[in-house]
Image (cartoon, rainbow, N blue to C red):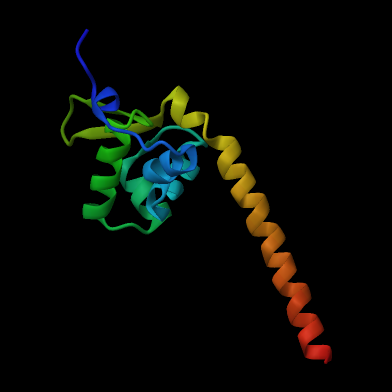
Length: 120
């Protein structure tokens, strides 16, 4: 059985550090967010994330090596490439949901804090 990049990678002891190592960059989180809705082409991901072509290419390659996404190339001209989350990639959805909820709660906290500040 050939070894993959996933099995070659030395992972940190701390599970939180593993998560941050895999998705600790804002671009990767945005890519996952977009792919949770389904398969997307490169330019669609680029447009929705606002990421540069060079950075996006690098992040997609890293995520493919880590087993989070699959890249499908269609033999046509011009080339067509689609990206999809793998099962393990989809399994991070609850983490992003929790982050979204925390972000919403924090925005509400800041709103209340600012109102109280203006009153005093």
